[in-house]
Amino acid sequence: MTTTTTFLPLAPDQAFAGFRKTAVQFECPVSEGDKTLEITLEVARIFLSAEGEGTKLLLEASNDGNLQMMRDVLSEQLKGYGVIPDWQGAKPAARPANQTLVTIDKVDRLSPSYMRVTMSGDQLARFGTGGFHFRLLFGPEGAGWPFVDEHGVTQWPGGTAAWHKPVYTTRNIETNGETARIEFDVFRHEGGTVTEWCDQVRPGTEMVIMGPGGSGKVNRAGWQGFIGDETAVPVIKRFLELLPEDTRGEAVLFVPERGDIQDLARPAGVSLRWVMREDGETPLQALDKLPIPDADRYVFFAAEKVEALAARAALLERGLDKSESIAATYWIAEKELAEA
Image (cartoon, rainbow, N blue to C red; front, side, top):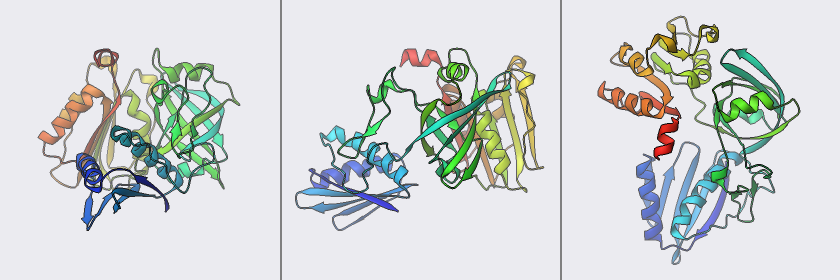
């Protein structure tokens, strides 16, 4: 565990109320004592205590990367109170601890619609034990990489809104001490920033990635269903190969053409169905057909935002609670972005 602290010039009652409200919103466990409040997250713990007329905040995380992530998140939220926290202890000297410099080794065409990128780096081994996901960082032209300021907070040249931070899944990782090589797959689509980058990037190019993110855990339910559109194929591939051998279930994956069909490792009791987009079936229709049992079950759905929201409602209507399913947004249609 690693920790950092800061003093908030906020009355304890005000600070406690604000943090309590956010914790309830995100369904995080909260415990309170005499002039103290503790919030437990998956990768960190927030501890508030009264200190004179202000509030002391102690942040504890499982590693330096998660500590940096939480320090940045809390600093952004505290701006709403007019507070710029000065974090003490465990301040990185330059690059944020949750960001890693990598070198692109090669980019291969995996199938008509997918590319496979291989990258390596001296500090990549932690991606083998953390979450499955990471972010590629694309900044404004000519901007330097993000850095940590004197308060211990990540600064983004040009402003954080100017950075494109798409999420990808570690497909395979080979480690040698702290050094590692990672493979990840990219779905090609017209106008995509990463698609264009894959077509232009050359071996030896340096890149910064952020992570790992996500729980890094596979659900242990006896029956599991997976439905994913083209963007979710890489993560479902990873889930399937990590499932316990006695898992039962069904996976339905959507791809643009038959050349994208792959032979995926999975338990013998999990069936796999590939759907061509030209066939007309949608991920929501596939979810409606999914024969979900009454207990010991888990459903993973990932697609465009509108479909993910509809799937979330459909799963709740079929009686699955939040511990039994997830409906994830993997991309947002341009029409929605234009209307936002």
